[in-house]
Image 1 (cartoon, helix red, strand yellow):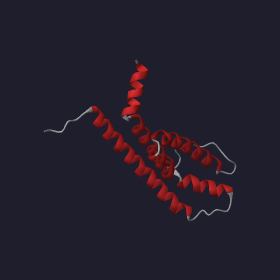
Image 2 (cartoon, helix red, strand yellow):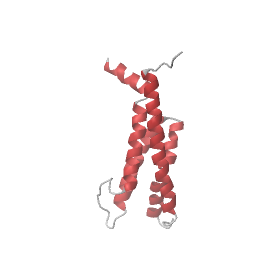
Image 3 (cartoon, helix red, strand yellow):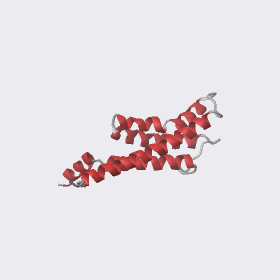
Image 4 (tube, helix red, strand yellow):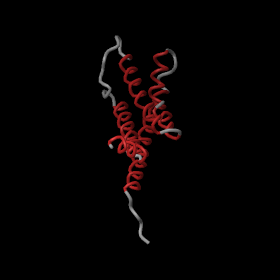
Length: 133
């Protein structure tokens, strides 16, 4: 009896690998946020918003336990919120690139990996095929 390799099995394996890699990156980013949080404090609203933007990536990723679709949407919204927060930190506030800091790069890469895991799921691909017919 040999091992039977199917497209669904390969797709599930890739989705799991992408999900684990994205979760690891988001956990690393949150760990760095906890270390950075020690020097920031909670004196003003701006400080609290910065601390939340530094530490919420992995807890939002954990929404994938409930729904991977919800986690993907929440992570993209969080990326935009973190970018807007970074834009508001300057005096005066200014429009900056969302990829000026490695923290944003890691967040973006983690979100893309989680999004790929969502897209490669069997149910999502099946829905895409039925929409194409």
